[in-house]
Length: 466
Image: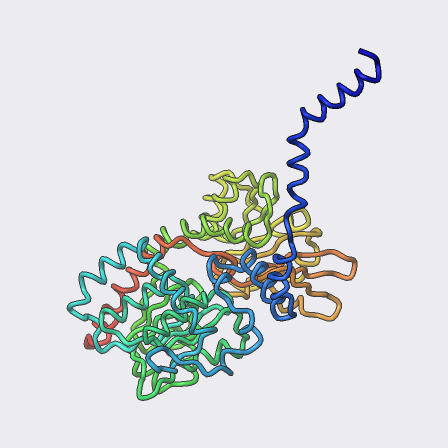
């Protein structure tokens, strides 16, 4: 065979050998994208694009799992106080973000019920007796799926309830809607302003032909509001149940001043709250909140935890397990010795503030991290609070003209100094785990059941002769 004939034969063989590739390569040319583009072009309006991008960003950054998926961005521009909403039964005695989210909230509550076995068992056992019949409970707590189970249990046991939120960032909007749909007067939504916060508390106290006789509080804001604004109502209160360290301190202040004229139950000092909720709940939720909001890796990070009570113990254990180098500040000598025995270095905040990557407060006190500490922090330092009150970090001192605030994502702000240094502030210094994540349901079942048992005790104490 001549050379030209050989070349031609080789080309023919190669053409046959790779003919399948040619067929494959031609296939994409037959796909038409015109219809797809026309379908997509149905959504390019300004409103549509805004809703699409917002749903994507919220689902990845909002501080609780499912609410972001159900939040209608078109509702964000109008305050719930300006809306006219009614339940399917025609009631309008509530104020939530969007009552249409009730169905999704019901699913959240049902999921929580599966883990809250103690509370559900108590409900089944006592709902026939209605031990709380006649109780008119005004509550101010975090409104989550777990507290939704608590509120519905109170109602099942005969109580009438009106509720508001104790934290402007912790409310799960769809849970609030589900509670409102069942007839509970709920006044709460995520992202309230300070004015909204106090307005919601006031509305929960003021019901038509309704006057509370019991208070279930978390932080003491509701108790002090009733004491200051409605002294006649306060005198008729039969009992107060308080959950948090902050609220208990405020009750002690009232007591020392001779102004606590009703029985008050300290849930926080109960063994079930101290040893389970404060410790194990925070041990799991601290990492959840930090990772959802910052995506930070903790291996090798320098962290200082201010306070080594039960909350601090949980936080330190979790951070140590992930390889963080943990320092502890503590004023109580016993707690400080415990921290030392667990292998943590006990320091003063001033000694480590320049080198740490993360600062976490969990003291229940105020003015723990001041402006002088914030000024000395390194670039990129993360600052957050695991205590109830937002007074542990001096956030007010950061709202000055020389500092710039930049919102990065939900509950995450960069505070920028004139030299370009950035400090990452989470939830504006408010409670991290409930503002930026969720908390373990099972532990809440233990605390909620303790509260349920304290309410009848308050009534009995009120009826006892002095």
